[in-house]
Image (cartoon, rainbow, N blue to C red; front, side, top):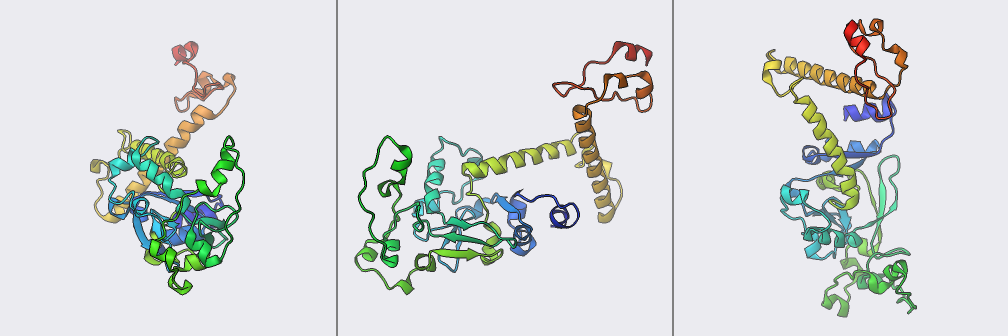
Length: 325
C-alpha cells in the first residue's frame, strides 16, 4: 500500500486502473489491502484459494457474495456453487468448451447491476437484476413487491438477435418457491435488496468478507482479459529475477547474516533487475543516427549504441568496427 500510494496520489500522480493481485493479497484483512486500494481508486481483480471459491457470504441487504460479486439472494444453487472447491487445475482450464464456463455464463444475469460508478472514496451503487428499464432476469417476487404491471404482448422480430434477447421470455427466471407464489409473505420478511432494489456499498462495508469483493466477474472473459496478462507479466519478471544472471533465490548470492542485511541485499538485486530491464528496452527502442557507430563511440563501455530499425532489433555488427576493435 505504501508503493501504491506513492504511485497514485502523492509523489508520481500516475493514473489508477485495474489492480490484479494473487491469493496472498486476496486473503489479507480488508483494512490491510482491499479498503485502502479502493479508496485510492483502484479496481480489484482477484484470484481465490480453493476453499474460498463459490459462496463467500451474504450481506445485510440479503445479497449473496459469490466469487467476489454480489448476487440475487435467489440465485439458483447450481450457479452459486459452480466453483465451490474447484481446484487450481480446473480454474486454469476454464474455457469456452468447458462445462463450468456454461455455468459461469449463466450466473451473469443474476449479479447485481452497477447503477453508479465509484465515487472518489470508492463507494458504488448496485441494483437488483430485476429492476430498471433493462432487467436481466424475470422475477415474480420483484413484480409482487413493487406492484409492477405485467409486460404488454409485443411482436418480436425473431431475425433480430437484439430484440429477441430483450424480450421477457428470453430472460432467466428467478426460482421463487411455489409456496411464496401462492401466499406472498409480508415485505418486511423479504431481503432488503428485494424491498429496496438499490444498495450502496462502501469500501469495507461488507465486513470481513469485503476482502473477496472484486470489480469483474470471476473467471468470465472480462476477468480473464484483465488477470491473465498481468499474471503472465509477473511470472516473466519472476523468471528474470531467478535467472542465472541474478537469481535472487540463490542464498550463495546473499551471504550477509540477519534479516535486515538480507532484505537490503535483496532490494539492491531487484534494483539491478529493474535497471537491466530499462537498459534492454532502451537498446531496442531508442532511435539513433547510424553515424554514431564509430570506434570512438564504443570504446567507452564496449557496447554498440542502438540503431534505427523497423523491427526494433539492432543490425549485425559492422565488419570495419569489429576488425578495428
